[in-house]
Image (cartoon, rainbow, N blue to C red):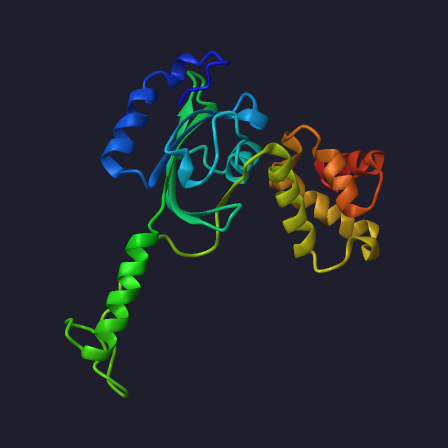
Length: 240
């Protein structure tokens, strides 16, 4: 499905047939998403198998998209592969992102694949449970006191969640702000000004201020006024 209300950038045209190709190749549990970074509040301009994450065309960017644009950490890379993503409803996916650049090398879009490996991981866990007791598979533990064989290889990604797939832009901003504020370990109304500046610094690094309305969300979360948030942002950007 393509967003008919927007004119696709010329750089995106070659990726539209690839989206159908990946969906056909990898099956209905693979979501293929095309992001246009020119409007982060509705960056999803094309989508295949949106039922995987529950998102639709016109949906917002993800927190990973914001961080890539804000921090330029991956300017020397063409893609990120096999990281862990999570939907708002708690679904987890093995995800990969290909950066689409313009003639000047700036990231103007991203082609993302989100693969739901749940049936494979369930099958793997079931097989592991069976072979752990029977010892029928080479390398499996044979019982108490025996040495374990080689570590099993998961078909899904592991490690911390690298991306969260939000349904709308307000959810994207709220989720990012809430997680960062909670990570400070202090209730907002008990934070010192320095602790609030530290929270704003992390929010800035996460790219949340790239979103419209983010200042109001941060002000509410930190129990300060919007002018105070703007002052904190200026301080952070000046190296304070």
